[in-house]
Amino acid sequence: MSLRVGITGGIGSGKSTVSKIFSLLGIPVYYADSAAKRIMNEDPELKQEIIRHFGPGAYENGRLVRPYLAQQVFGNPAKLELLNSLVHPATLRDAENWMKKQRSPYILKEAALIFESGSAAQLDYVVGVYAPIPIRIARVMERDNISREEVKQRMSRQIEESLKMKLCDAVIINDDQQAVIPQVLALHKKLLQIA
Image (cartoon, rainbow, N blue to C red; front, side):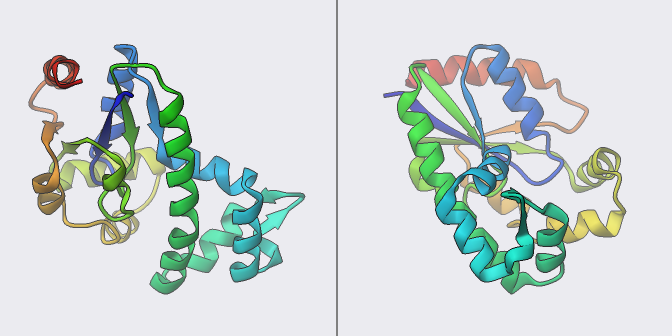
């Protein structure tokens, strides 16, 4: 069984970039966000639950209508929490099945909400990717073409970054000052030793 490593960080921290470097080193990576999007279209039970709670407008021709769902949960913490409570267990099951099939010394699960969703319990080791808030805001504004306020609203849904980093077993600093690749290579070496 592979060592199960989580990789997390706040929005705009660069966790996807760091995960891509690990995948270039031959390490299998499970991207929880894209998996959740896929599962919301493929898992029949989950689809039924989403329709039950958010209405038939959530799907059109069997495909999720993202703008409809986003409108339902935007600015409504209770509905967002409800949606997460439906999607997270399905994603955890999918990740578990994926992990069992991997044959690598260690594998990565990239997810923003590792501690918030309870998926840390599935993992042996958690790596945090840290970047200062001003850098994260600028990255997300550019990447998603959204306002500073929208970025701050998304950030408010995640646990405070310094607290998240304290919960991690290792932290990669992605502050545009320190080179990321040497940090990843050092961690890769360490993880291979642990595995």
